Image (cartoon, rainbow, N blue to C red):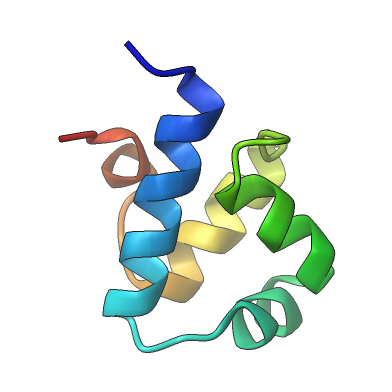
Length: 70
């Protein structure tokens, strides 16, 4: 089973693309840096709880959907 951060990052990348957002757009909308979004998507870091809500809101999903891995 892959690392939770890696699974989360892959899921975020998929949902972000489905929402039609670039990393730059998501970063700007959430107040994060592009580097932060990239690091989260690559599984290097996990987001803080406050940022989970911001990310979910911007891509139009509930927070729990960010954790629904295939």
